[in-house]
Image 1 (cartoon, one colour):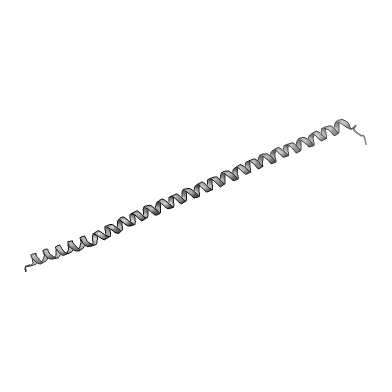
Image 2: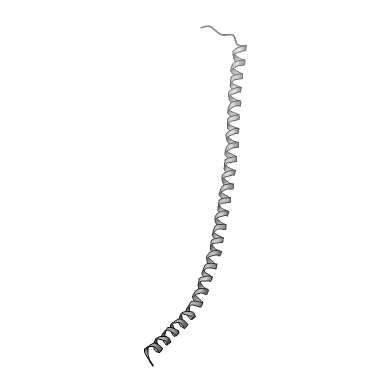
Length: 99
């Protein structure tokens, strides 16, 4: 057997072994890609869900704080007006006293 024939056999065996190995590797690569897509989809779904929860909570807190602020502001103005009215009434009905 000459070296060219031997080299041809070695190349043939090498190609055959590479084909045998390449098939499962490609299958594994495809499986890994599919798993990555599934996990990625689930992760993005979870991130979107968390974002919606945070947005809803923020909107709720903002609404409560806004309502509370308006209530306190309105109540404060009512008290100030009541005090002003009471002072006005008291000054109208009482004669000033001289010391």
